[in-house]
Amino acid sequence: MLDKKIIDLLACPVCKGEVEEKENRIVCKECGLKYPIREGIPIMLIAEAER
Image 1 (spheres, rainbow, N blue to C red):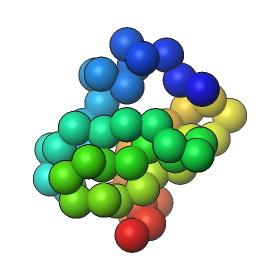
Image 2: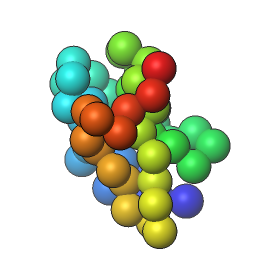
Image 3: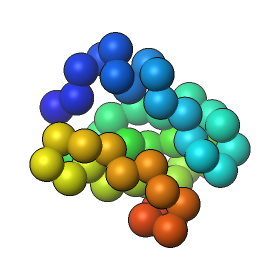
Image 4: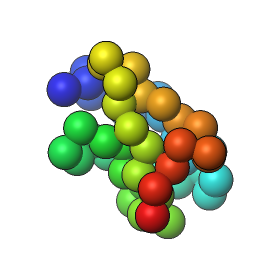
């Protein structure tokens, strides 16, 4: 689980929306894209996103 401070600093690279952590992924609250977390590091690359 990521520190809340880190999540508060992140934004979706596609729509710039607010994100939250769910099921070991970073999920955009606006567009719904899901970004993986690998070894405790959020991978916020558009190419890595899932719908």
